[in-house]
Amino acid sequence: MQSAELAPLPFDSWGLGLKRPLLVAGPCSAESEDQVMAAAHGIKADGRAQVFRAGLWKPRTRPGQFEGVGDAGLAWLQRVKHETGLLVTTEVATPAHAEACLAAGIDMLWIGARTTPNPFSVQAIADALQGSDVPVLVKNPINPDLHLWTGALERLHRAGLRRLAAVHRGFSWFERTPYRNSPMWEFPIRLKAAHPGLEMIFDPSHVAGHPDRIGLVAQQALDLGFSGLMIEVHPNPAEARSDAEQQVTPGAFSTLLDSLMFRSALPTSGMRSSLEELRDLIDQLDEDMAQKLSARMDIAERIGDYKRAHQVAILQPERWERILQRQLRLARHLGLSEAFVREFMDAIHRESIRRQTFEGAQEASVGSEEHSSKGT
Image 1 (cartoon, rainbow, N blue to C red):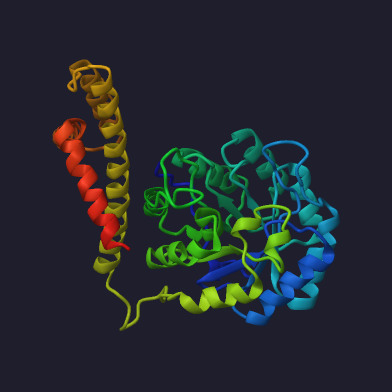
Image 2 (tube, rainbow, N blue to C red):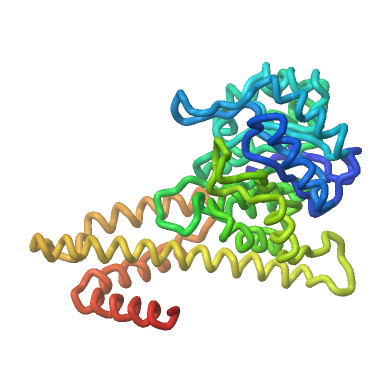
């Protein structure tokens, strides 16, 4: 995924007076001029956000839902910029959206998670923006595909756009998690490792899915060295026409920022060493792996219940061989040692077999009960 072509500029070279951490805030959707201005003035009163966000065109899963106010909202964003001094940004999904924003003087744009995975759409937007060098934020695709995320950035870069940043908003995934979208920190970490100069913004609203969890994931992102946060702020979240459950009021936004620890982006005498930062990354990835292994063992245990109920042997050598060969092929693609992957998968297989036996399932159940009792 390494690309010599992708060389985006840091925030301090965008010519907009931006600084880290960049705070982007505003409602999921622009619903009315009064709603937009109430949110903007509330955010401005806090004094820490630099950019106001609001969606004008809303790509929805099914027709008939609120799909945004469209071009009419551009005048509202212009008013926000004039009255508050905040920079303004909105999502674009078509060349027509991009052209309308350029004509209205919108400061920056973002490409959403539903558009990023479509190379045709991204290329069409890149062509429409060619020659403008307007700042563009690129959200990760809905599903975990690092090549699509990188490819979208590369298409914009090839069109001459240099003020680019990535936005991590989590991924849709089948595993049970306490979040709306799984953070899967390994993906933004790998993107950043491949392109160290790329600014990375985190969207805790879409990952958390609920105000109570926004602070936790936002702090994790800041600890991992993200360049900023994009947070959904609405004057009355209960009446929001989209994503009502994950937006916060301007007052709650201020309280949230007060609770976060913002770390310096530049080396200082008090900043953690590079070694400690890398260890923090490892700790986060280890936690993610532990959660995924736990989910895998839960599924293995359910398979064991099914096998016992239907008098099927626990060990299925043909099935295991297919799993192992698939992982070995993946290991070669990812540059992992075959010996390491084989040993790691063998350990997983042994634990899966143990959990599928009646004794192993009983032990897991007791362990779960003990953990639950300690947490109450």
